[in-house]
Structure formats: C-alpha cells, structure tokens
Image (cartoon, rainbow, N blue to C red; front, top):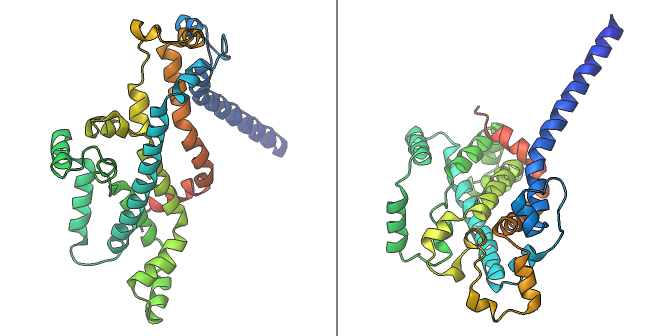
Length: 294
C-alpha cells in the first residue's frame, strides 16, 4: 500500500513537472522567437521562415539602432526618468503609506478617496491641459509628476507596515522615539521586501511607458527610449540613398521593419533583465505580505 502511494506520488510529481516545463517553454518561445527574428535576414523574416534559429544571420538591425545618436539620447532620457521617477515614487509612497497604516479619525475617507483615484482618472485631455498649463511640456517632469503617487504601491506598503509587530512600535514609543525615527529605523529596514517590490514596479512602469512621452514631448530630442523606438521605422528616401556608401546600402537592404521591431524589443528589455535578478528574491515575499490585511 505504501509502495503504491509512493509510485502515485512520483507520477503526480512527474506530471506536474512536465506540465510546468511545457508551460514555461510556451511562455519563453515568443521571447526566443523575437530574438531570433532580430538576427535574421529581411527576406527570411518577411517570408516567415524563422522558427527556432536565425535565418541569414546578420546584425544590421542592431547597427541601425546603435549607430543613431538619437538612440543614446533617448536612452539617457529613460535612465534619468527611471532614477528620478523611481525615487519620487518611493519617497511619496512611503510618506503616504506610513500615516495611513495608523488608526486616526477620517482614515477610511482617505482610503476610499485613494481607491476612487486608482479606479478612475480625469482622462487624457484634462491631464494634458494640466501638464501644459503648468509649463511641464517637453521636460522630464511631465514624465514623472503625473504618476508621482502610485496608489496600488501605497496600498501595498501600507498593508506591509500594518503587518509589522505592534510591540516594536510600542517599545520605540516607550523609549522616546518619534514618528520619523520609528519610520526610518524600524519600519523601513523591516519592509525591504515590500520596498523592493514597489521599486521594481516603478522601474518597469517608467521604463516601458511610451505614450506619455508621445503626447507630452513635441521635440524628438526629449523622447524617452520607448517612445523613440516606437516611432522608429525604416523609410528609404531615394535622395538619401545617393549619399549612402555601398556598405550602408547593403545593410539597409538586409533590414525590414519586422526585424527592426524585433531588435527594438530586445534592446528595450535588456536593462529590465539586468535589474530584475537583484530584486526578484524580494518580489514574491513583498507581494504576499503586502496584500494581506490584518
């Protein structure tokens, strides 16, 4: 009887392993296909011959992107946006979540107001009017100020603070610690998983956002990376072709919008892939603890 149960358990484990492996491969294949497509030849990509390996291997799509000075300018704008916007998001999230984690008169009113703001917004046109009337258009502040307080992150950190042992705060209060000391020396060190989680959300959100750069920036020099690569298409002007060298003409003939778009996706996801491993170990822990209400 025990042996049959052991065999059944092994079969169940094997079945689960096989199902999860197949699911993981299905999730990874689009990413792998995009990478292979970016290294493939124009004709093979347009004909649909690319499956698991690049066909007509070449780096022409990456050369077109990396040889453009506007690419590095847009990359710098995105890095600046991530650093500035991520810092503002984190600071304002903590400053708003900490008092809301305490009991005080009118707290529920504030909470309902936050939930309402999370579910409903003023709309695109009022947001655009506000940004332009404040003189933020064509500046980095137009990319970071409208989303300075992410409500979902505030709720996550607020619940994280509420789940901390109350005895710690009581002991700190008895020893004469004030609210700022309690926040900086007790809450923040114990909330690293939650802070890492909301930081990852902010980084990914700022890095992947392209639409706000499109509507708030009228000058291409101010485009963040995602807006820049969203607008990047291959347009071959016959007059410009006369000024191209033979090598440049060959390179242009090897690239299509399909391969270029794949290269854009690959280049855009590299920074996130570099940052995510350092925050991944906190991610699940922070989500679980921050989503539980005491």
